[in-house]
Image (cartoon, rainbow, N blue to C red; front, top):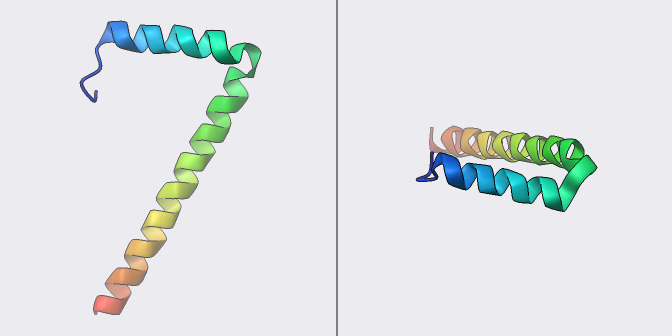
Length: 54
């Protein structure tokens, strides 16, 4: 996964826990919604481009 091993993922997880603590679930939720909104925007752009090409 992106050239990241298990040890690196564990270290990133521990750092995230230390930084965000109890707020981690809400941070992850907002991050997930941001990513899905970004994907939706990219999908809309690709539909517009394909519509204009035809």
